[in-house]
Length: 357
Image (cartoon, rainbow, N blue to C red; front, side):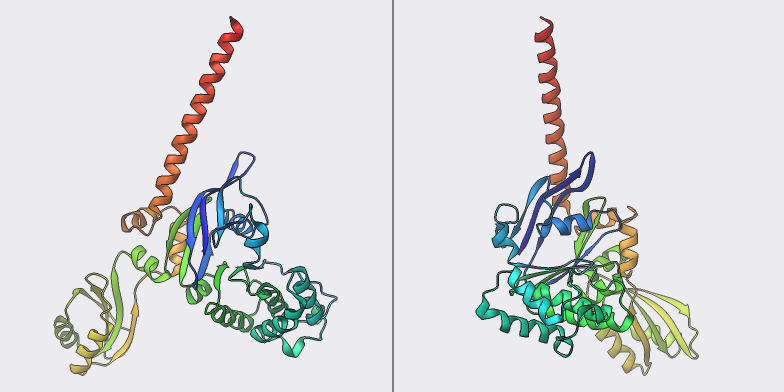
């Protein structure tokens, strides 16, 4: 588990990370999203212990990353955006070198290296120079070094950047498989990839956490309704009559379909029930085949753009997906800072009066 508590990072007067609070639970794949300059990379670097925070703390399984760095960092495997490779080494030489740097006992190195090469499918290129490998295979080598030492938490910063579509799919499948054995934190600008791979999404903007939930819940809440888009073959009145028998359908909105002899409908559903099965059976009984049925919720890309443009945050605040606790703590912290500043000014004024006397 990773606990981030009241995390702050300042560069001079610039607040890069502004009182972040969140928890990463074991056994899940987390997507960490934010526009350029949001503080995403800074936060990732603080979680890995690469840079120190100005305020707050990060606990890795209860160990403070700054106070107990050796213990905490052994629990983390990190793949930065540019993998730290020595390209004049072979894959096997590099992994032996990385295993030694990580302090893996000699008696366990060979077995561990064999395991990570198998996981990342590097066996066929283990004796090739890294500089002669494709970008996709270089990324696999970087991922293999992150897996050395049996870390519980894997942190991946833009793992598919610069890869071709086939390589992206291969790395995506590999990340999914890692989620069965590790906690994975994935930073990526490819939002469709995050939506396909991640169980939970954290979105930050201007150094603050603006959303924390599953991609599905974020899409539902931001869309403002539980709705389905369906295309059904048959007459409008027959389809309406069949769907009128289905409970929890709040409204049916008809749209003219481009498909011959078919109708398009937006089906608005009361509450959060999954009504797909009920709709299927009702239309099957009416002998009206369903040609298409899909959620009308917003995509993760649309959610991301809306949130980071400040337009959609009030929706999340009302639905509690927004990190209200984080906001409350932030307000308390700001009040505390204002109080401290007032006290300093008061003391300064008193000191000035004493000097005049």
